[in-house]
Length: 439
Image: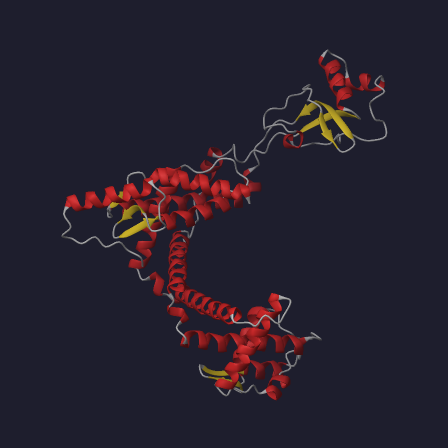
């Protein structure tokens, strides 16, 4: 767990000087490790901010309004408090999280090793991807020779995963027969069967290409096991970058599990509470009033503008349509059924009977429409939205639980925000937003 440990004997003046120096650094171009806030013994840095902004912008794609810098900074602090509480309870040591972190270290180590191998590939292929593939295949073959590894091809070919015979399936699930011996251990038939389920969830029974799929999976499984051993032997899991990636994932998983745990409670509110929540949220449960229109389609905008002007002057649409040659008789304008206001560019509650809409372009011409009927808005009956309402209620209760936990943690933790931190968040937010827009 990353931390900024302040020695107990540091004088207040030294702390002030440290904060002043940090502020000066932030005023310039802040480094990734520049501090934004101190939460107990931990430090929130610009790198943490960039990660938070990346996630925030991904979630807010297509929205005009971006979060306020103060709210971004506060969310970083709150997340840090929750993560700290998770570490205090030893959550990171549970297999739910530890197994995922171990897998990340393993897979990232293999990737780093393969990148190193590919970098040595001779330039004999016109296609760089083919050169990389050939270099990796040659490297794996070299490892097999180095460690004297032989695959029992006959045993592999005898594994009938296409069979529907219960006895055959049982044998595949329980067989201890060894397909290959690696320095890290034996690869057995039952382990192959178990691992294949993660890729072929429904099995390979009755599949004509089952032998090919079996061989392809074994090759990938074997290669990953061998490369994983070699990467570990060469010290790739101890590399700083892989360590940082694993630490970040661990923190993210601790945060996720802590928040999820606050939502794991039996929620059976009494009927009176459900009804009160329903009445308090009628606006969210009331769909926009639908409307019906009478409309015509004209070929050109100029004709549509003149048509609307005459409607504004009091002409009746059907009467005017019969006397306007520019109205297309061969194509329909808008359907006479109930329509949502948004389909016509209207906001909820904006439409009214008799309203003449401005002309707008559609394929084939320009539409002029008059609202003939507006359906009175009515909330959905409680019986129709009960499940949705219970989900809303539980989500609100969960948010309240999180707020209570955060308040408790804040009360017991010293939190200091570096002067100028909000300015850094604002600048970084502008940069990230511009980058997203450009991409």
